[in-house]
Image (cartoon, rainbow, N blue to C red; front, side):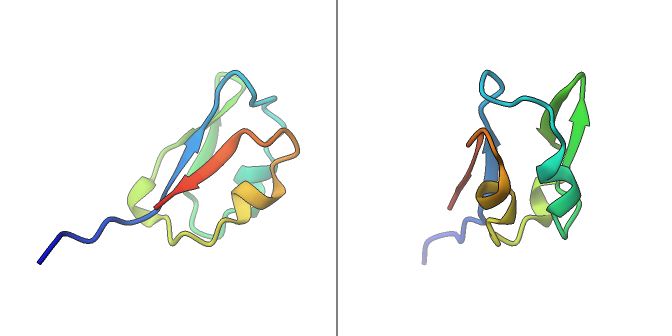
Length: 65
């Protein structure tokens, strides 16, 4: 049997404007703003809901399965 991989948000730091939308909408507290940019701080908590990806106004987040 293969291992199960959980989804993880990936942030394009060049595209991130630091608006904080992703941080405020993430129900699992996966993201925080650090040095003016979004950062994944609790990747194991990600459930793959893709809310961060869907609400990012600069399309700086992709959730990779």
